[in-house]
Image 1: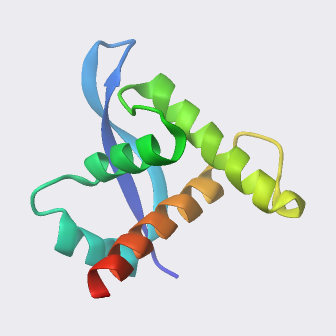
Image 2: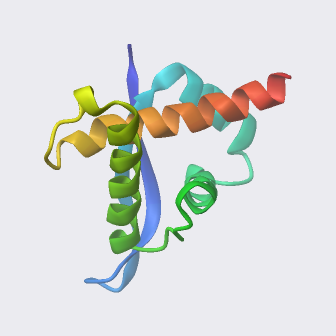
Length: 113
């Protein structure tokens, strides 16, 4: 499976600037299709913000909220799949990928219906 790096724009509190930050890697085919269909007007950042607000009630604005969202994603999947959970920061990446892929595939399915 080919993966694509997803970067989002957030406020960097330390440097007091808007920066690009790595969010996760996601399967390339659905991501490319999503970008083609939805990202002509809005950047993927806007969709991630919307989904994070809907799922966790967190406004994605800065690096602190980004870490918070990734923690919520990890906790969600830890509850769903406790036997697959690995304690540590490296576990964020896999669950963040799953969460984003589910959101992208859901949006694509909604358009096809």
